[in-house]
Image (tube, rainbow, N blue to C red; front, side):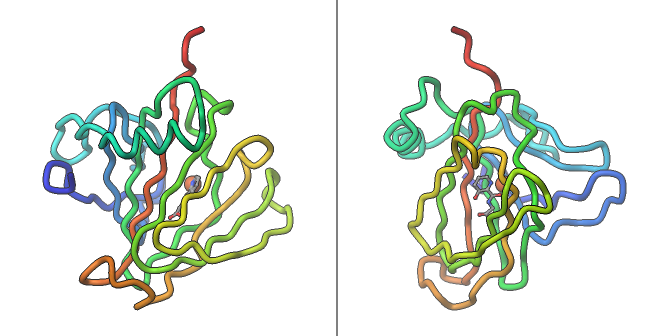
Amino acid sequence: MVRAAPLFTPVMPRTGKPFSVRMTNCGPLGWVSDRAGYRYQATHPVTGRPWPAMPAAVLALWEEITGYAAPPEACLVNFYGAQAKMGLHQDRDEEDFEAPLLSVSLGDTARFRLGGVERGDPTRSFPLASGDVMMLTGPLRLAHHGIDRIVPATSTLLAEGGRINLTLRRVTRPRS
Ligand code: MD6
Ligand code: FE
């Protein structure tokens, strides 16, 4: 998949500061960030090509865990080297906040931080290890969250180390 849609380095809106995490996507829509802002789009920001299809196993996992009536439209793939982290944020670029968010962690363990809907709410942190699947739904759908750090050499899944996280999202409101 990363052969068809290479990892790119997103930058922060306005400032252009690069993320430490590299990204790609699969599915009909992909999440991107550049100086113009955060958004979903149907094509890769560097190659201009449509994102590769979502693997059947990923669609099946969404169906099994979320039971949501419509399939996910975006699978964001985050790649973390040993030094990468992700600041506290909400996932709120979707139209549909009714749909859960589903994440799959692969490779080295990460220290995940979870807060509340308000930015100043208390936070707690816990490890996400390779194979962990986490759903943010209900009152946690809009909770702040981030990755404090990667714990190096905690998995042998990726030959060169690091961590991959898949985040599956429904972006548009399914029509009823
Ligand atoms: C990560 N995850 O685990 C970053 N977002 O690398 C997220 O930003 C995330 O894990 C929404 C729902 C679940 C998540
Ligand atoms: Fe997120």
